[in-house]
Image (cartoon, rainbow, N blue to C red):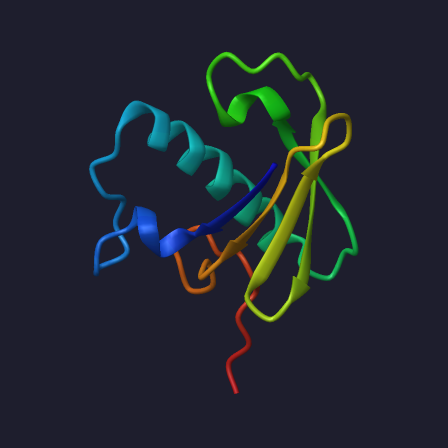
Length: 105
């Protein structure tokens, strides 16, 4: 199963988290942990995110680890190293979880 997530779907027009259901909050927390980890290490080809696969939804039994990478402009791709769970995250750049170093010209 592939989860294609647009971070804007979880945010209001000011970039603040919307009121979410408990299930949506769980997914959102999972996604922002990936965004934070990848954007902090954006030059690395593959990042071991400090997340277990089962943290993306209640009741999942997979104990695999999440790996992620910045694959193209604006897209982060993640996958579990054990099961077939995978996905992409778009529209994360410029969010408060974007930890890329900024260059001032």
